[in-house]
Amino acid sequence: MNPTTLSPVERIGIPHSETTIGETYDCEPTLNDQQVFEFCRKGYLVLEGVVEDEVNHRMMDFVDEHPEHQPLELLTEDWFVDGVFKNPQAAGAVRSLLGKDFKLPQTLCNHRAPCPAPPQGWHRDGGSIYTPRLDYLQVFYYPQDTPKEAGPTEVVPGSHFLRTKANYMAHLRSVKLSVPTTAPAGSIFITVYSIWHRKGRSTTNGFRNLFKYNYWRTTEPRRDWKLTPILTFLGPLSTATLLRAV
Image (cartoon, rainbow, N blue to C red; front, top):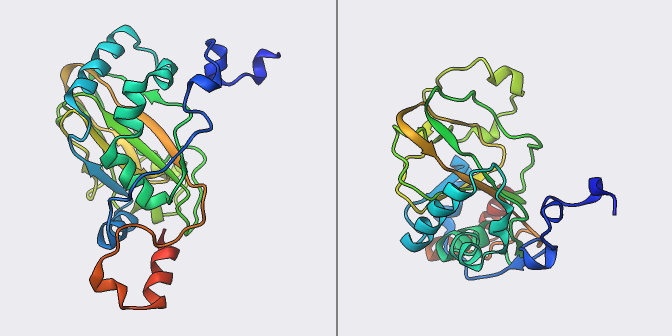
């Protein structure tokens, strides 16, 4: 087989059958109407400390031995897939936003940044598109405590609605409404792919580890998260409005 046609995991000798590639997952949704509205409005959701300490400790041991940008061996580790990709709180939120049988991540990266360091430039990731549908989520996981001194990712709430070219964003230094995603170890934050973000300024010593991966929708959008009783009587208009938002 031509090496250029191999997937990243195949290039390091791991068959797809031993990874999450191509797998779908389903679980109970955990977000209600108000939480789905809030996610659509702000473009992100932070779940603090949801990954178990044992998994976080194993992750920190792992990154010390595997400091590379794309540690694909993790896709074969049940303790990681179950503890992070299928984490009940995080997967429940993904299920609420993407519907049943969503696709599990097929790759991941560790944005391992030496500290101290200046802030990164504001950007949205390549491939961002503008659509009223939510078919794709970009998710971040901190295996270690990440206070402001460690340079956590900063996001701009609502920026996923702004149609701005990358070269217009590059000159910006600080954005008044930006929010640092400071969080304890084991925190996961879920974002709309096109949200503005950057690595914040760090002033401490050492390394900040941040794992980044994605989930995909496989079913048509419908209001099948946890329903808020006060909204259920509003009829077709409210349901249509929600579905246009997600």
